[in-house]
Length: 184
Ligand SMILES: Cc1cc2nc3c(=O)[nH]c(=O)nc-3n(C[C@H](O)[C@H](O)[C@H](O)COP(=O)(O)O)c2cc1C
Image: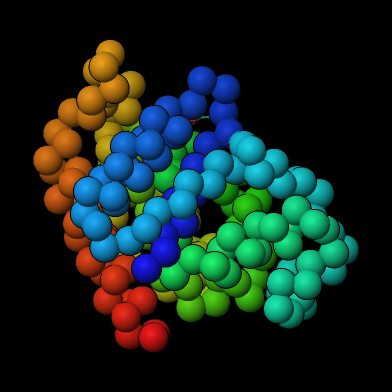
């Protein structure tokens, strides 16, 4: 099973890449999914959406080459995990923009979230859930949640409470696996 892991933050000095690298290793250790890492900073989607509504586009035939590339990443994956920070009790604009660029590719796609930030990130998960549900993502309840992100990694890059976060990862991957298997 193929898992697309999306780095949502494009902020200078972001923690997101470190969190995503840790998560990819946890997925490999788990062994059920083959992860592909995609960085929204590198994908560099336009913030100017095309004239045609994404919901009117069929079979990935978007006007913009970048949107077709993004659509193919999502379409090729059995499931998607967003590594998503909380900004002002919501999701990062970069993640909302990435969601907005597509539509059909999201329909029924099993999706999970690795949240990180200052506190529990419950607000951003709910904000994500509202948009995700509208585009018909199949979001799993279990999520990975890493609070106090500024203190979460030591200088050697080790994640504090890694056992607990691997336990969370196991729960989320199990829920994604169940959805992927049910769709096959
Ligand atoms: C604009 C902004 C707003 C933030 N708002 C919240 C928030 O509402 N809740 C929270 O838990 N953390 C909040 N934080 C802390 C971030 O989650 C934390 O800085 C995290 O490292 C951001 O992810 P990034 O470094 O990958 O960009 C905010 C950070 C920024 C930059």
